Image (cartoon, helix red, strand yellow):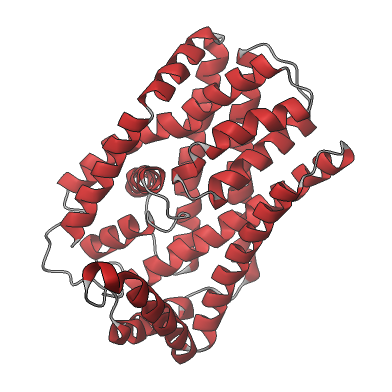
Amino acid sequence: MRRFLTALVLVLAVYLIYSRFAEAQKVVQTLQQGHFLWLILATLTQLAWLANLALTYRYVYRLLGMESTLGQLLPLVATSNFINLAAPSAGVGGVAVFVSDARRRGLPSARVTVAGALFLLFDYIGFLCILALGFVVLLRRNRLDPGSLSAAGILLLLAVGLGSLLLLGARSADALARVLVRGARFINRLLFPLIRRDYLSEARAYSFASEVAEGLCALRANWRAYVTPGILTLLGKVLLIGVLAATFMAFRQPFSPGTLIAGFSISYLFLIVSPTPAGLGFVEGIMPLTFMALGVPRTSAVLITLAYRGLTFWLPFGYGFVAFRFWYRRGGTPNNNNHPPNGRLS
């Protein structure tokens, strides 16, 4: 099954490139029009964002009593990000990369699964803080629309749902198991007409819930331990805003801090809640409209959007693909029968 899933990710990646090849060409042509030095700064800032993600994971691991170096986590983060870009998963799909690495290194897979969930929760909460600032800017400029409010409501539900599951698991493994069993039954009913069998095991849901509860027991109780990953999560969003600012400078377009924050907030919001990988198609349409509503000329808004997506989607997609191949050859997915699949409900 895992070989099949790996092949599926590669097929989706190839299809994405094929279906968006014309757009990728436009991105390259757009980047060629920008100021070289500012684009180099934007690229370095984007790579700093990647390093910040790995550092955030390192501190989340520490919350659960695990240690990993940046050298170990950087390729995992790049690979995980590639999977999330290739397939819509709201950030969940890439967690399998860390679970597979945990098995290879002898780390508790339950704790690593919890670490992935905590990382997502930190990311959602951190972005909600930035989104609140963006909404203030849009409200003051009378540009806040119902669509953005609805998307923010979906994100809030995702954050509350994820946080509730973690809290439920920390309090009672049985209660979490009951929720997972209901979810497994729903998915099985949904997929049964296609595969004619249960895709998820209800029995496995109970053991998985116990493993997650065990991982949650390892969490540190001291609230100060949560400050550093929280700050790093916010720093990651600031770095992405920095990429956007450098992109504005590359195309010699004046901007205000409010324009940057509001434009980034709306684009990142739809990146999370849209059904396509990393908001592909949605962000490219919404981001220039947001900038135009904030007073940026249409031509500049389109150029900046294409360049920014080139730096934050296609660049990570490229080095993520290289990291994915490296991870696969090292045995990250595979055929390793020495380690039973503890991270999935099937």
